[in-house]
Image (cartoon, rainbow, N blue to C red; front, side, top):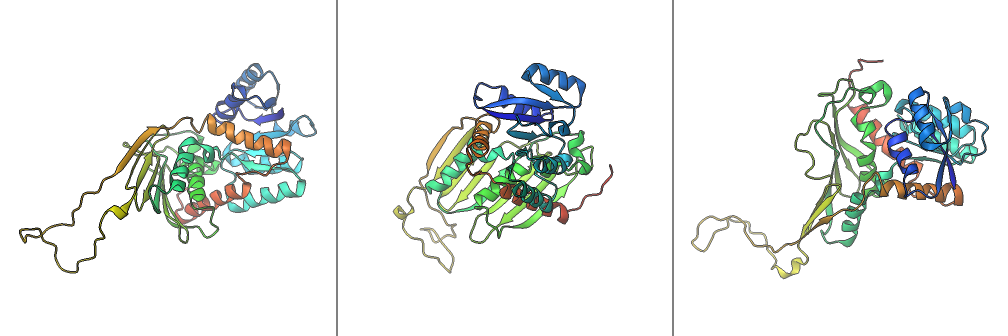
Length: 356
């Protein structure tokens, strides 16, 4: 068993990590300690997990019965707490965002190496079935050469909690953005030459001072253009989460369903040499380019989500790394690249700060 401590019993610490540890799918991790300062949440955790509950993460120092600490604290605390834990010899899984800046991420990576421990960031959506299905489609070649990938994490909802404050390292791009940005970078092969070709951040309906609309377009040499949108003000969101546009067809999926439309073999259609003069029909009347293409179409269901099978796959990776010495497949360097993109978008689109 991998012995785990969880810092925080909020939406992530309890409802994602805690829910997995309490599920039937988990037979290889045991929660031995919860860190929670709120009395009600602390008492509830004690009942749900039947383990030690302490009020401060510093009370973990000196313990030798913890293999991994899950840092699900407030976003602005991720860096400082993770760094402190690494310096005290703990392996740490940090919730996203991994840090506020690329420098913070690199410092965590270097601190982990200096102390001979593991640091990772919780990018479980790199194991989500919808994302893996899209990668499968690209690898199959059925849609041809993919030239554009669109990722949408959108909806229409107002928000007024701490996740709307710049001082909390929050807003749409820092909160939800690490998921599509991480997927985008993976589609681009984690190319070090990836650049932010365009970005726009806006604060529209949020009660706080951070972004509730984010658009980021990434490019890399000889790779597809990747269009990322995290939009809390889109009343028609949900048509797709991932779309692949290729030279032979298109793939589109939500998190539960997919559809595919492609031409298996273009060689069955005669070549169309370019005509430099006008095109006309059999009656010598002006005409548009027109031909009938026969598409193969497919649709289906996507089994599993980012909150069940993806979490299981991520923790299996963590177990292999912590308990068996296997390399991480989702590395902290990847998480640092995600923050590099997000920090660049914020630097290029500074928003007024109204709250401390």
